Image (cartoon, rainbow, N blue to C red; front, side, top):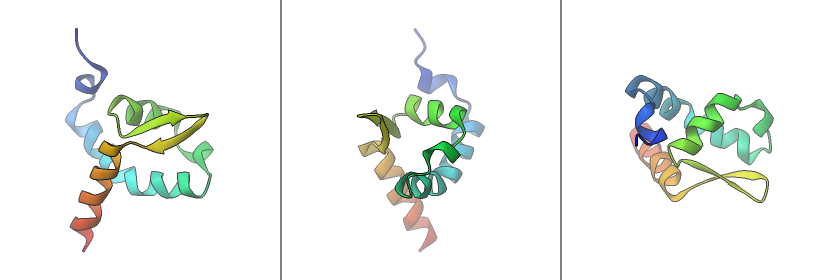
Length: 74
């Protein structure tokens, strides 16, 4: 069986990676409604975000991706 993670194209994963820091900023400002629903579904499928008590939060994997993105910026 194919996992949801492998169904996402490399181009889509790159686009999500590029938008991840902005998405995390929206979540920290409690603006999750501004994140497109499709993006949320894909972030969850990639295990970068997870639902926790009705809110979205970064997973360990998502946190590591953010750290990699910050390292590229500096």
